[in-house]
Length: 241
Image (cartoon, one colour):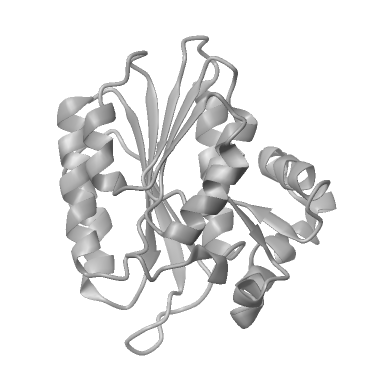
């Protein structure tokens, strides 16, 4: 949806979960030398300024990366890869937060490739500027749901796909299931990661159950920061891998 800007939510608890899991998976897949393709269907701007008007409007990062970063000296070793990446990024942008494209590019190798999709014109321009000198990366100002079809299977027969729509439209839930179902038919041995919000609505509650019917070789991870209250408000998020 062209109205959605992730800058308002950058560095929140959902980003922390999503990016920690993303880095775990990339690090695991790097154990094989064969090239890996990384596909991001909703890449966003790739990097964010937490001092910006958008980020500071609700200051969601205060309950996400800032909360975690303040405790980095006592965090478990499993989170160190993520924390190291944030420190690396902040060495150049002290008040910044990297998006999934930057984190993936930071961790991936010379032989790997990145294919990034972003439809919002302003975010696309920022993403393209960030990635312009990285020859591993191709950025497209188009629908990542549709663009994924043309990339599967990749030449190397190894791929990690992050599916991370804004879910502002109810149709996004059904599209995620349809797109993943099609991707599994085209490339069953790929690795797919679906991020989803935990919301007090039927579509949100049913999504993980619908994804589970597509493939039983999966991992479901959820982080809840609150109890559901009323008819709206995100009380956590999940990753379906």
